[in-house]
Amino acid sequence: MSYIIESATESQLETMPKRCELLNEVETKGVRLTSQRRALIETIQQADAHLDAATLLSRARLRDPKIDRATVYRTLELLKRLGLIDELDLMHLNGEKHYYEVKTQKDHLHLACFRCGEIEEFDSPTFQKLKREIGAKNDFEIQVMRLEVGGLCRRCAAQQKVS
Amino acid sequence: MSYIIESATESQLETMPKRCELLNEVETKGVRLTSQRRALIETIQQADAHLDAATLLSRARLRDPKIDRATVYRTLELLKRLGLIDELDLMHLNGEKHYYEVKTQKDHLHLACFRCGEIEEFDSPTFQKLKREIGAKNDFEIQVMRLEVGGLCRRCAAQQKVS
DNA sequence: GTATTTGCAAAAGCTTTGCTGCAAC
DNA sequence: GTTGCAGCAAAGCTTTTGCAAATAC
Image (cartoon, helix red, strand yellow):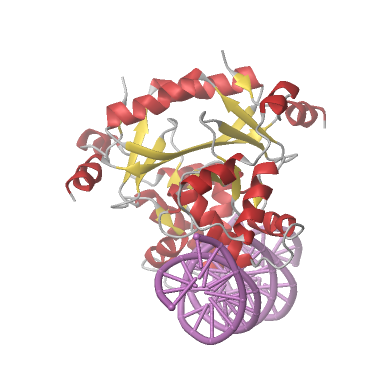
């Protein structure tokens, strides 16, 4: 069975830990925890959608007003290195910036609509199978896997045919 | 069965058309064929590996010395729009530039080694199956699909363990 | 002859870096 | 008290754009 991952359901929210999970994970890795990093990590954790660096900066500034752009990029680099976040291109729908999301146990792929810009997430056993296959048959030690699809979402494909 | 696509084998070379295929395709699309476009297209077609814009420019200049950077980007945009080439990120192994390759009938994915930079290509029925699944179950009209994997190739994974 | 494309140069967009002072442990 | 991090400002790299001159058809 395949399914679309929607935003957090009620039951997921209920089981969510009170404290920011990413923050806990970072602490266990022996990383120095500055107020800036705290603000950035909490912002990433609570984001409703995929954040780019500039958006992350402006949101984090609500928590700690004097965070600098450089700190954002350095912190993102750190979290990537620790394997706590994933970096996405989202088919470069809006320029060359990157987007970030908390890494989950379950890999998923992103469907980006060229027309309306909507991003859908998708996962299926076939995707997981493909991942195992790559590791096994090609003898490749996978660290990151990024599958992005560009095209038209259901709604936009329908509208395209009308107009 | 899955397999790694190696560089052209002898038999493939024998069946290759004498004239640049891309060029033929472009002509059938009713596109104005300038000397610059000709040089760029021939360079892309004959490339042994994935080219970024700067490399493409310098190689194309061997054929037509006064091609400009802007023309390279505009031509790449054109070929992308016509569906004749694919744009890759190759996990941003070397900065944010893009890489280009002639689009083939068969989709394939790219395995990028973070250590040695080698790019392997890979295709399997599972990948094709996943593509069909995305279209069907998610009702998404796929235009481009980009699957990139970062990690360690066989050789580098082995060396990593030793050192 | 007309519509498109090119070259040039400048700008734009995103990310990185050097350095000095500040903060976490 | 050390060691590493933040802020600032500047530069870096890739890609895009406006416009006048050149070129394909």
